[in-house]
Length: 187
Image (cartoon, rainbow, N blue to C red):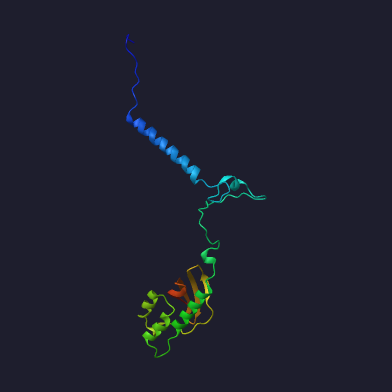
């Protein structure tokens, strides 16, 4: 090298500073997320501190395949719950009115009787039904719960034409029928 010549390292450009800054931000975000968002050692969301980490005597540790999101749910799945007795009663009353269409009854009379047990949308649809086309004439057994829930239930009511499957909904504290499906008996 010639005398007086020096070797100078070039200064890092602005891109290096931006990359370093972004890396630092990502590291801080990850650390904060782990500190704040991590589940407590007890497995219960929101449990923090020494009291939460002390296991109860005789406790067995189990790993849950699904993390606890903290939402309280009913342990019984809706398909296994029984329909509310009021939903069964509403389904029975609807089906009895639906199957009752003696000679001489007008469509308006029939739809008014059935509509008392239906939600407004179904009641409106029933006004266009000719009661003479309803194949069932009588209910042949008690209503059975097919699936239950807090505000909705599926109920089956046997008739002489097959099982009527009704969707019942709880609106304003009153159970009404919102859907009807006749499952015909094999002939």
